[in-house]
Image 1 (cartoon, rainbow, N blue to C red):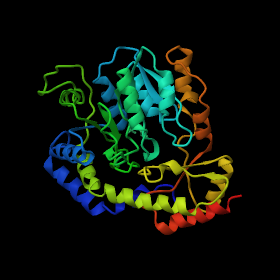
Image 2: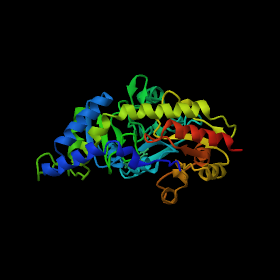
Image 3: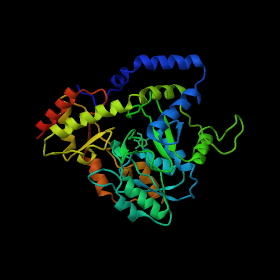
Image 4: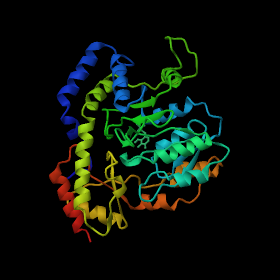
Length: 367
Ligand SMILES: Cc1ncc(COP(=O)(O)O)c(C=O)c1O
């Protein structure tokens, strides 16, 4: 069986060093906000080419705190892709702000700058582009719109560690930008974790308070804060895995190339626009007869996933908000098409070239 993802195999390669880090952390007696977090924060901001990195408890928290720190007026509107993962939308709602869903471009799957422009109102205060699947949004066009209308950009980079656009890593375009280290990500911890990236000294300092009960000096609380801290042990694991991130991305790029070169099936649409740009957290294809296709692959020993089966606008939780008048929903045909046809193919650090060649062969046999 070719698994969609095998985290045990991904981390097995590092297991000797991971155990060493775990043992050293146990022996240090210091488990939260210590040297390992500080070191990882420096390493990750250097890797991205940014000034500050602040480790937090998850990607959702990274998004939530990125918006919190901006102190936007209540009920400000934040533009967000209609085909994103629910966490992006939740982070807006948790700030008492209003998510405005924007259709993606059908060929890139990323938020469409032309559609962004149509959704701007006097209440719009920020754009939250999500670099979905590891491919970059059009940050040049989004940057121009943000400048023209005086809007903040907050990037959701949860799926795009190391993705580059125009020579710059994503996570360095917005005022503050969020990463997730959920175990399946290209840079994944062995538990939850996240980080905020910013070049703004004042914002970085405020987020450091906010993540730690609003406190700079122990037991002195200057502002209403939260508990959202990256664990020492996870920071240690992340420092180790960061050293191999580019190698992992390179491996995934090679696997993607195999798909691009070998999949030749008229029923399968490849993500051609991602070629040469994505870091392939996910390799998304579109297939009209999705259920049949996935069953065919499974019957031939290949597991796939869907990212994501239900669009946010059709989720029960979001529908309820609509009925309470807290969010306005429209129809999102491009998004819905992606949600109904998307299939994620295996593309993990643990997959071999031979396995992906076999996946291609089976895909080409689907009729
Ligand atoms: C696009 C996107 N944003 C945010 C998140 C939230 O990250 P976390 O699960 O670390 O809270 C995820 C996680 O999968 C994601 O894919």
